[in-house]
Length: 126
Image (tube, rainbow, N blue to C red; front, side, top):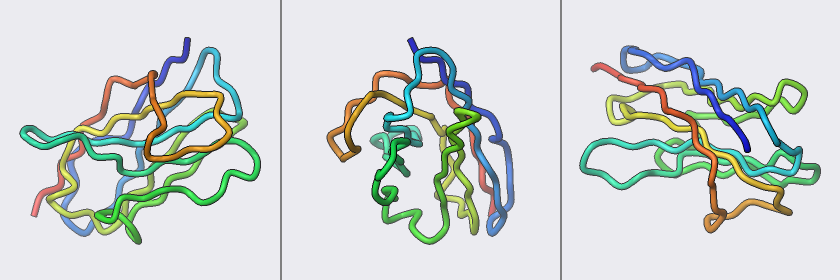
């Protein structure tokens, strides 16, 4: 079992920055897929960014809506996933969830995530 706990959400003005953290505990493995997803009422869940925590993992994935503004990273020693968000826009307002699963050889759009955090709200005001 893997437990994920997000932190770092809150309110910020447009153009500002915020960093989300996701601390993982339990049966984690270095060869995991981990990612950030977001949800807003009335819209489908969006895969924001994902990263493979194993060696030779390739490049992280970013949704087009956040490319160039968000950066995903993972600290293997601390088992913590981060999402650095810059140039925030009101449309980035959402509940952000951390997700993980593995072990996998790589991550893709079809990767199944069975472990989810409780979510952290990000609100960007104009």
